Length: 165
Image 1 (tube, rainbow, N blue to C red):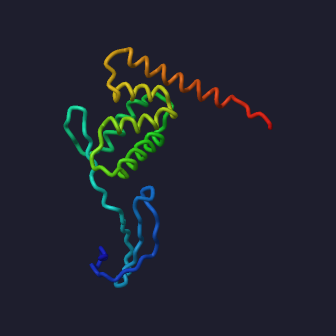
Image 2 (cartoon, one colour):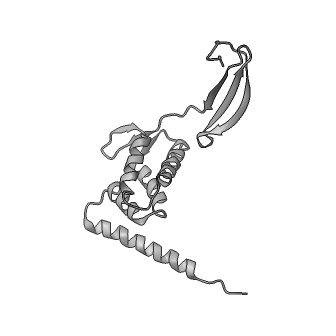
Image 3 (cartoon, one colour):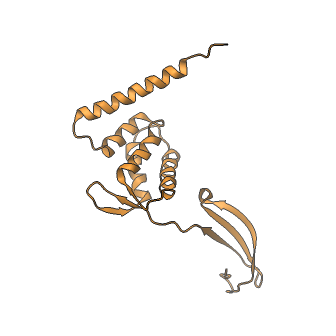
């Protein structure tokens, strides 16, 4: 690593920390020639993930686009920006761990919905209505009915008491 002040190669690492949620290493260095301190980052070079859209076209995965679509679904809901960022981080992490370099937009939508459902039902329904591309009101009602049934099942499971042996 070259010093940005004097261009010397002699330097030592003073401090090392994880950065960007463990996806990068931040190193604080000191030049052995001029004594200047500087910071470097080390990260794995990630391969670009392509998103296959419904119409057959493809584009590179865009974190900002996903963030914007989730933010729209969560508008005027009690969902914080930190919650939305956590969902986008989870989606991004899952996509980088996939073996394939191409993923369908519907798969991304399903991952987002898996994270939105327990967080906020209204935001989930808003997002699902776009990603599942409902053709009529009946499909939409079926999804809401399934969501209500699942909530009732979870509620009854929480309310059951354990009997002593």
